[in-house]
Structure formats: structure tokens, C-alpha cells
Image (cartoon, rainbow, N blue to C red; front, side, top):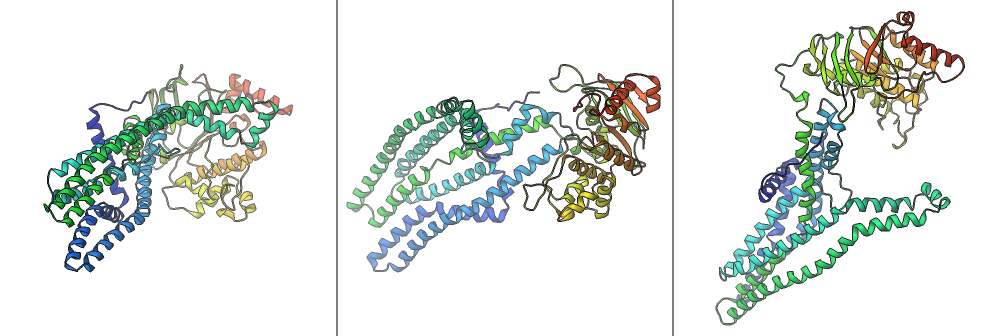
Length: 616
């Protein structure tokens, strides 16, 4: 599935829409801190006009020998401007944190709220998510807060421009365009210079990442051994220097061009400003206006150029635009999640374990050459333990992913008590899964378990019972801080667990969900890291603890699945055998062949699987 960011409409219209979109992010900061920041910025923007008027008042006061109040006013304005400069960064930091935090929270909710994950596996969608996350790795990468605050600052800057222009107009109206238009031209020149530099830099960003990577490799101890043994130093330095020059040579050339732009800016600034100064100065000398007013006009004219000449922040807007566009494109890429659908028409789910049917279900991964599942018809009865076996690539894990609603079938449908699972309200709350690639959260043991039902208030008794059923009691006894021990070495005071112990934690998490609302337990190779004896003991315990719960078990150890009520053999994406262990052995089919092969290997002291198993 390709994802395309729309570029329709005129450039000016699109830019205007993006500016409005940035400004709409400002309320995420909270009105109090946003109002305080706006006040600080307004104070700084009004300093040029205020300084000009206070200077005029001071000179007039000097004539009347009354300079105290004007002097205090001028001092206050200058002090306020300095305080605004000092106060702005802390306010901005708070605003950035809140705006970016709200943006990333909404993004996470949209991504996590997508009922299926098939779209998230598309490379184009992954790129959009990475861009929309707005986690800058380079100076050219900006965040929504950068764009929003820059647009706000630009609006406030125009307030400063108009206030200073009003002071200039007191001398003569024609002086206003003489000063303001060149000042705007200077800003336009500066913005184009920065945007051009930004685009040249970003055009070579892939080379930048490569030369940074090769530079890191050259100073890393592990790679340093091979660099010396195989004599790779010269080759590596060549890689580093080659990518550096491919990236930075155009940047350095643009730096040289920027020097010529600086000269242009000086000319555009000096000519109109010098003309205005000359006109006002000569007019004051001829008595056409007060000297105090002339001083105010000269100060305000200079303030106009300093206000509009600062255009480096244009990079903030330019760098934040990709984030905004990626965020919008995700709306089309992810679509509306099923959980957000109207409640009307949603099917309720019975409190007990439902009757599940796969009705002629086929499934093909996007971009795959052939289907993983083909015309699967399967019934999973309420409360039974159903084992799913098959060789590598048979489609076992894919079938469980479809049952969990993580992917929609390519054709056919999956029902629970007659209703399509995609129509059932909060269907995924009814399923608890131990995935092969379960997550190892860098949290306490307690938190790792209660995450199995994160929407419910943690229940200490249910948590302990789930851990007991998963065989975690010996692990808890050895942890220095018990349930509150962080099980990650990246956390202070944390410890790591073995692969088998982590698998028991994942199982406890799933069993905790079962002790709440989940009525379907899916175990996808839940004991792959455990020895045969521990696995047998664990499953014997589980059989007595999951009454009334439908259990779907996938395991490559056929000695374990023989305890299931029914065994399904998947072969080539189809259900080819179904029955109890004794029935399948009597049928002397593929299952019986696999079982005998595995038993023979085990008796000979070899590995206890018929064929290496992987996710299908």
C-alpha cells in the first residue's frame, strides 16, 4: 500500500492552511501559560516603539528641566525588554513540552487505536509515523511546537512593526512605506536564504547519517578489532570522508553564496534607512519638526528593521511542515479505527466464552506472492483447549493474529456467537494472548503483570494468583524488592531475567487478563524457553485453572499438545487434520508422523522438535 501526501491546491493556499494548522496547536499549551508567554513576547515587540516615545519625552523634558519621569519611563521600558528576553526561554520550554506532548499523545492514540496492524506494517506508513512523531535528530528537524510558536511570534512581531510604523508616521506618512517596504524585503531575502540553506542541507541528509555512522564505527571498540585485523581503516575513512563531502560540499557552497546575500541585505537596509535619516535630520535642522520627535522617528525606523530582519526562525516553520503533512497523511493511511465507530450497530458480547467460527477464511499479507491461509473453516468450541500444530510457515501464528482482530481476513469472516468479530464491541478485551515476540517492559514485576488489564484498577490478589499459575513464585522470592523490583538493568536497582523467566512473566500477564474479562486465552509458543519438565508441570497446572476459558495453544512440543481436547493440523495454510491425540495417531497421518519423529529424536537425546519452528 503506497501512501501519498497530498500536494493539491496552490502553494500560497497550502502555506496559509499550514500556518492556521500550527496556530491551532497553541491551546494544547494551556491558556494560562500561553497568555503569559504572549504577554512577554508582546512586551518585547513593543520595546522599539516604547523606547522611541520615551526618548521623545525625555528630550522634551530636558527642555522644561523635567526629566525624572521620562527617564524613569525609558529605564523601565529598557528593563522590561531585558526581563522579557530572560523570561521567554523558560516559558517557551513549558509551551514546547505541552504542545509536543499533546501531539505525540494524540498520535500514539491514533496508532494504538487502529484495530488492525496490517497498515502499520507498511513501510510508507512507518515512515509517516516516524516523521509525525517529531523526535528531532538534526537541527533541520523541528516539532509542531516550533511551528506553532514561530507563527505566534510572527504575529506578535507584526504588532511591533505597526506600533513602530505609527511613530514614524507622526513625522510624515510617506516615510512609512519608505521604511516598512524595504524592511519587509530584507525579511523576504533572509527567509529565502534560510529556506534555501535548509533544503540544501536536507537534500543530503542521507549522506549526513551515513558519514555520522562511519565516524561512530571508527571510534567503537567492538568494530575497532576488525578494523585492525582486516586493515579496514583506510577504507572506512574513505567512506566517512566521501559521504561527508557529498553532504557538506553543497552546504559550504551555499555558505559562500550567503556572503553575497548579506551584502544585498546591507544595501537594501542602508539606502532607505539612510534616506529617512537624512530627510528627518534636515527637516529637524530647518525647524520642520521638533528635535525630540526626530529622535523618536529615527529610533522607531531602526526598530522596524531590527524587528523584521530576524528571519532565521523561518527554519522552524519549514522544518515542522513535514511533521504536519505526515500527521495529516496518517489520517488517510490509518483510517478510522474500529474502536471509534459509533456504538449503534455494535454487537454485545456474551459474558462467557463464545463459540468461534472461521468461515472460509483466507489471508494474504500485503505484497505477498501467495496466501498464508486458504479457505480455512474451523470451529472453536466454548471452554475447550484447542491445540494448533503444523510445520514452519503453515499459518498458525497468522490464524491467531486474525482471531485477535489484528488483521482483517482477505476473504471469509470470523464470528463469535454468530456476530462478526469486527462488529463486536471491545472484542480485543475478550482475548488474552502470549505472543512469541512478547514485550519485555522496563518496569517492575508487578507492573509487567497488571498491564494485562491496563484499563482496570490493579488487583493485588488476582496478580499474585496469575503469577502463581505461571510458576513465578520462585522468581519473586529471589528478587530483593519482590514485586516492586524493576526487571530491567536499564533502571536503577533493576535486574534482568532469563528467557524462560521472562516467558513466565508474559504468561502471568495473559492470565491476569483472564482473571478479569478475557475469555479466550491464546498461547503462541508460551514455553519455548522452558525445559520439558517445567513445561509439563506448567500446563498441568493451567488445565485446572482455565475452566470455562477457551484456550488456543500453539506449541512445537507435541508431547504437550496431546493433553488438548482437540488438535488441529495446519498444512500449507489449510486445516488438514482434526481430532484428539489418540484419534490422530490412529489415523496415521501427518500428525502421527511428526509425533513419532519428535519422540524418536527425544529418546535419542536430541532436540525435542521435529523441525525448527518460527512465527508463521
